[in-house]
Length: 171
Image 1 (spheres, helix red, strand yellow):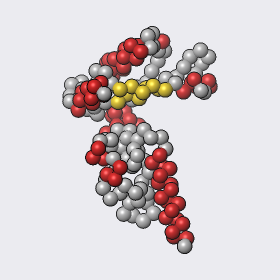
Image 2 (tube, one colour):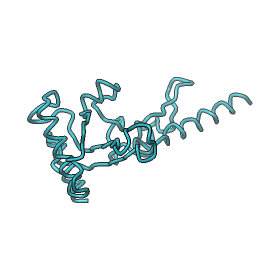
Image 3 (cartoon, helix red, strand yellow):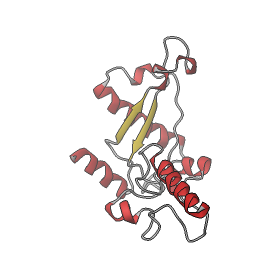
Image 4 (tube, one colour):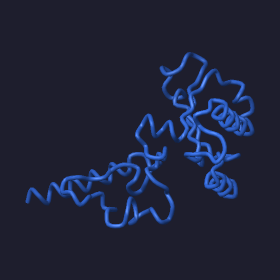
């Protein structure tokens, strides 16, 4: 918990976390077609990186490389030799996520997952049931309950609401 708190505080202070929270998946362990034999594809989801660093810029390749290397070194603490096994990598910093995927502020959760924006407050008070003031328009992305990181749940929940509304209309 202390490391999560420190990582979050770093980002709030405009610094990429010195010890970021890293989620690693290895999709090639299940799908051998996405990497050459004996090699793997690794996805790293790094939390607590500010959109606009207080010092430096994500547009600077050296800055990005330094942060990536810091992440790789942290993984080396748990999986020795990880960083030396990397053949190549691509890094998407928050501005890259915004530019490439239209994710405002580079936040894949479509807004902070703080206590003030969860449950009945997600995305905002009065809209937590997936309906919007415009009839027939529903919300179903990471910005809705239960939020990003709960794969597919916002869409599934919204689909149930849409189906219930359609049943009411049919009566």
